[in-house]
Image 1 (cartoon, rainbow, N blue to C red):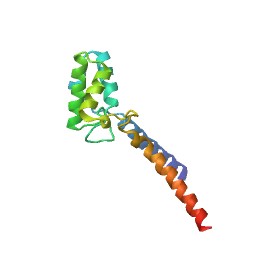
Image 2 (cartoon, rainbow, N blue to C red):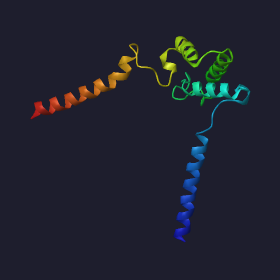
Image 3 (tube, one colour):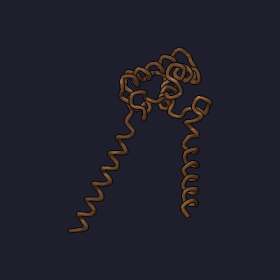
Image 4 (cartoon, helix red, strand yellow):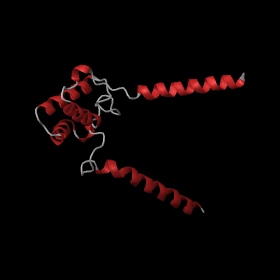
Length: 137
């Protein structure tokens, strides 16, 4: 009896994990947005996976259902149809929204502190802990 209950419990847990896994692969791209040319569509999807949704902020526009994300996906597809290169599309978006729109912003002088401030705080914290312990002994 206990064995059959534990097997059922394990099957329920596995099913829940599989449902969660499958649901995380859903994308917000709607059928009317998809380009007919598969190469162009692949480029559009790759670009939109690297662009941050300005509403959700922790999702790419490829995953977001926000209206702004949809507008950006359509804009990217229009730029691709116009013949723009990926670099030109990224430049257009960063000129308009700043480096924050990129999920992986580049290391440059504008955001240098964002990249190194955590390490500075870490070293400062370690220094304070050791200096305070040395002083109290």
